[in-house]
Each structure stands twice: as structure tokens, then as C-alpha cells.
Amino acid sequence: MFILILPHHQIHSQVQLSSLNQPFRHAYSQARNHVLSKTDPLITINDGNVILIHHGKRTAISYRSPVYQDLKAISHIPLTIYLFLFNLESNDYDLSLDQITQLKSYLQDISTIRQSYNFASTSDSIIRTQYNILDQSIVYLRSLLESKRVNQIILKEFCIQTRILFSANVNLAARNQLDVLHSIVYPWYKQLLNETERETVKVLILAPKAARDGTVEKLYFYG
Image (cartoon, rainbow, N blue to C red; front, side, top):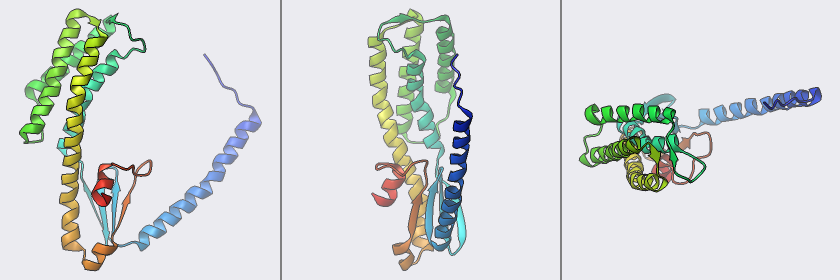
């Protein structure tokens, strides 16, 4: 076990530095609140919610649909399988007893979803893609548990096949998210904002980091 012991003066300096950052946080918060209080109309995107500030009134609506959640959960299945089998070495290897138990349980979970889950979407294309991901994952896991051995070539083929479906899901999820966002924002734009406000409305996209080029929300407002 490695234990890092810092000198007392170094710990004290870190505490001082942390305290020194507090005025910045306070000043930043004050400046942000001042700007927001003077900006009307304002549309804010934050943690799955779209918020309109208009004539001092705040309206917040979630734009994360059940379809989006379904697509994300199903897309994670092949990735989960890969992570279960992840090994820094590229050689084939036998499954451990713990891995066999883990994979059997996961296979049962996937099979149950395949048989009984009702997807939120009514689109045949979306539903078909989800079933294809489930079916390919089930077939691979059954084969893997039968052989009890990881063949890196077969694993790579599984990843390539499901990556195509994963990419399709990314596009479907983005399209769905844009549609839901538009269904909320467009009525605001047309029914609540006058002609001048439509030209002056500001959009603020909040995130842990600055909105990246290509993010759905940034494309919607600035694309």
C-alpha cells in the first residue's frame, strides 16, 4: 500500500489556495446572476431541461424522452459485454468462474428484455434496430458460454457488427432529441415571442464543459 504524506506547510498552502478560490466563485456567481437577471427573453439548456425566461416568468420542460433512454440503454449492451471481457493482453483466454456467472446472469437479463419489453418508440425502424442489437448480443453470449473461451477474432467481429447498429442508434437518438427539443422551443418562438424578441432572444447551454461543436443542442440553435 502506498500512502502519501504531505508536509504540514504544504497542506496549509493547499488550504490557503482553496480559500483563495472562494472569492472567484462568489464573484462569478454574482456576475452570472446579474447577466441572467438582465437577459429577457432567455432560453437555457441544462441537464436535460429547456428553460424559457420571458417577461420574468420561468418555464422549464424536460426534453429527454423515453425513446432516448431506451436507445441509450440498449446501445450500452454490447459495450457492457466487451467490458466484461476486457483484457489488456490480446491473447485468447478461458473464462473464469466469476466471468461465467456474470455473463450467465447478464444473458438472462437481456433475454428477458428481448421477450417482454415494450419499447417507447412506435417506429418499426427504431424497434428493429433494438432487437437486432439484443439478438446479436444473445447469440454471442450463448456461443461464448458454450465454449467458455474468449476468441479475440470472434469478439472483434461481434464488436464491429454491433458498432454499426450502435452508430445507427446514435443517429436515431440525436434525431429524437432534436424532434423533442423542437416540439418545445418552436411553439415558444412562434406563440410567445414577438418579432423583436425573436431577433434578440439569447440561448445559454450549460454543461460541465463548453458546448462542443456537433452536440445536438448546439446544432439545434446554432447549426
